[in-house]
Length: 214
Image (tube, rainbow, N blue to C red; front, side, top):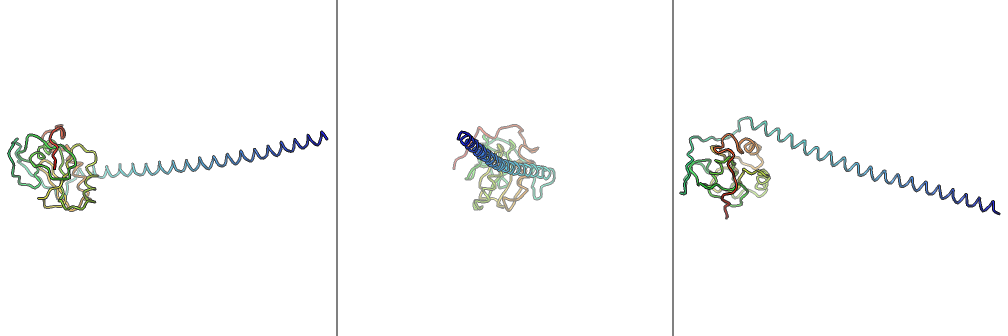
């Protein structure tokens, strides 16, 4: 009887050990699958981020290369005056690209309304680029221009009713008109002329002065 009981206990222990071994194997398999799935997701994220970074680097390199070449349609204006005045100024260009201007510059930034010429010309003197668009430009294109401004501290964006092209880029003595916010030349203009060689007062601020209101 004792032998039978001992054998039964041994059989139960063997079955329990087999069940536990099978459970451990199942747990290891489940853990392997989970870790493998997590690993695949991590790899996919790394690949996606890498593709985005590489794509952005390549795009930046492309823009830099284009910025070293002449920009088609760019107009240049010379012999611009630069006196300070409190009086209204009649400018030859629309929007203006230089000339006499107010002693207080317009703070760089995005404005959903027209901003004063005389103050903004002073911003151009500090190396800012002024992006303007016709007021009836579709919102999707305005959004594209807003994205183009990004975090730059030397860009102004505003509507401008009295201009010939749907979108215009202005820097001191320089201007480019285009038909669409998707035009590659816009990014090239920014690359070349934000604080570019045309800047009359390098290092001067584009903040801490006038923030226009509607």
